[in-house]
Every structure is written in structure tokens, then in C-alpha cells.
Image (cartoon, rainbow, N blue to C red; front, top):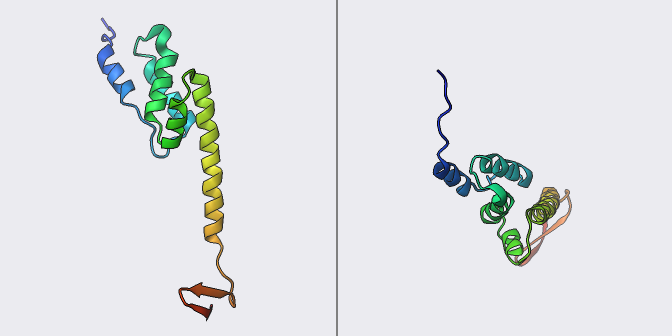
Length: 121
């Protein structure tokens, strides 16, 4: 006869409690992963609070974490919204920096380096 092994709640909660946002993982992916992991933890009505707390603890962005911690009335939905906005702003900032660093001086442009201001490309 086939039977399902008993779920080890302590182990499931350990896995959930250890979950941090991966280097290439978006906020949406991280939250989806937390939702999957929490489903086997038997937290009942505390599930949303546990996801919120794990989100605050596990996100990569320190500034976003500080912002979330300052909100004494923080809900899961608000935390996710703040994380998404900050993630989007960071992506735009990175895109802007990327565009600026790809600009290359054209031939004939003056390059100023230290005290020598008359080198040409």
C-alpha cells in the first residue's frame, strides 16, 4: 500500500526561514517562492505575516529593507508594492548608468586627464 510520509514541520519551517532572495531573482519570483515554501509550514492565519517578515529579512536591497522596517503598520501587500517600486527604480537607474558608460568619445574629442588637457583620440 502507498502512503505519504509525514511532513516534518520543523524542517519545512527551517527551509522557509532560510529563504533569501537570489542574486538574479526578482521580487515577484522571490515572493512566489516564499508562497510555495510557506504552504507546507502549517502557519494557518499567520501565513501572510510570515511571508511579509521573511520578505523583509531576505531581500537583497538594504535600502528597501530599511524602508520596510520603518513602517510599523506594514502589510504583505504593501511590502510587495514597495519592493516592486524600488526594484523598478533600481532597474531604471542601472539602465541609465549602462547607457552613460557605453558613450565613447568620438575621434577628435578632447580628453582631459590630470594636467594634460590636449590629447586627441
